[in-house]
Image (cartoon, rainbow, N blue to C red; front, top):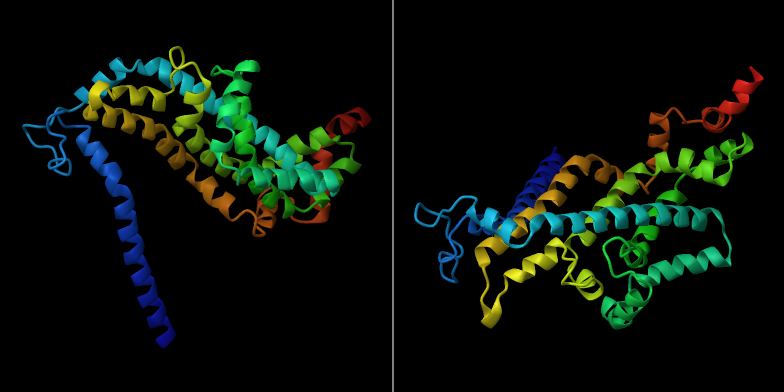
Length: 314
């Protein structure tokens, strides 16, 4: 009984501390939202933390002005193209790379793994100047090809996460599919990918937040007079002689944050699954798919790869 009371006290203290941390974390976002609804003159050093009142409240005027001023639709399109293409390429290439590294135990696979891990340590500033020249030479300086560059910078984290998940996957189901006639491509897309779904979504969320909010890499590589992502366009509210249009800038910041928040809310269930995926959760995933024992895993291989052969025998 005493232990139960102690646990309750610890849980209560932890709940209070985490609540305070959450409020402190959300407070800057709340203040940006409040200031985006105020007039430009109301956003000063002494009044920035005040809530809007009848005199300072302007509704959605800052949002409308910001969208019109920064050519929001074209900036949104470029950001969307870069984010979707980059994340899709990272997920496809890095998941296949992690599967190869885990299943093929040789010097090449180990070298690839350590190279990917090392890439997370190297600071971006070491390669930024040579990157600009290389991107111009290889014609990667547009929104439709820059995903190749993002693949190089995002591969380290993605391969690291996928490798940890694949290591805990039972190899029996892949062997059953191979015995039944699957080639490696079929095994990957029909057997491995469905099990990798939680980790793929978790990795996609992290990579999306990075690519969507990235300012330095597009500014360094793209032609800023022709292509502007949303973070690049927001910077154009900083005028000459230090003048900054704070109200429309904050409104555009809220617009930029909104898609990531919506994506997180939609995928939060899979994010939790992805976090615990490397700790033996694969048995649960296999049970949900009816693949908990060796016999069921073999039957799964028959269903996935031997369907045409069984049909021809009938």
